[in-house]
Structures are given as C-alpha cells and as structure tokens.
Amino acid sequence: MGTKIPISIAGNLVADPELSIGESGVAHAKLRVAVNQRIQGADGSWQDGEPVFHNVSAFRALAENSANSLRKGDPVTVAGDLEFRSYEKDGERREARRIVADTIGPDLRFGTAVYQRMSHAAAAPDAEVRADLEAPVAAEAATPAYNVSSKSPVVVPPFGVTAGNEMNF
Image: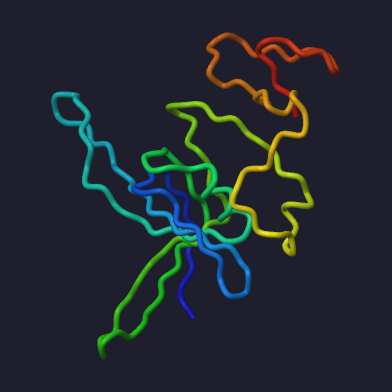
C-alpha cells in the first residue's frame, strides 16, 4: 500500500486529458499538470521558475467531465491525494507518484467559465458512460448560470426576476 498525502495544486494542462474506460466500466482520465513557481528578482521583475510536472488521475464522472471540459493549456486547480507507489520493472525497483483527484476545476484568476450542471441520473455510479456533454434542457440552460467577467457589481434580483448580470443557483 502506498502513502497518500492531501494536496492541492494550481497549474496548466500540458496535454488534453486522456479518457479511457476500464474493464469494469469505470472511466479513468489521465491529466498532466505543470506548476510554475513565480520568482521575484532583486530588480522587482517576475520570472517563471522551473516547472514541476504532476500526473493526475480522475475516475468516474470527474474523469468524463474533465475530458469533456478541459484542453491543453487550460489553467486548472486540482485537489486530491498525492499517492506514492513502488513497482518493479526489468528487475529494478522504481517509484512513481500521482495525484488521485477528488476535484478538478478551471482556475478563474485569468479567465471565465460557464458551469453546466449534470442531472443526478447521469451522475449515478451505474449510469451509462457518455463521451459528450449533456444537451441543455431548455433555452434558459444554454445561458451561463453566472457571469464572472463583469467588473461591475453583481446584481441579484429578487426571486425569479433576471437581469443582464445575474447569479442563479
């Protein structure tokens, strides 16, 4: 059994997520995330440090949603367990590490995202594995549930009334 350590990282995807379906029917996505430390020089200028690359594994609905939503270069945040494993290959003992993700999301410091909620039936463990995003149920579902790109105050209208800059939950 390997060692597991809680961890959260913020970085950029090095490649598109690779989605596969195991023999048991469980979806598995492999992601590779580069994390760069920003270093401030003596003159006050900022430079990127050496990147650290992390292998990330996601399973079930998280794997499917990650593969459908994320692309190479996207800034992401990942929280999960850092897992160390040892194995033998060609008579040599080797070690590997990966993050088994509990959550993965876009990093909204430098951009915006539109959230599309899944139905509970599609999120059930025995639900059929889908490789496409769920189609919006109504025209209202096609509009973003929130708008984080506005620098103006967010207006939350009273029950059921919508405005241009809305937050609906």
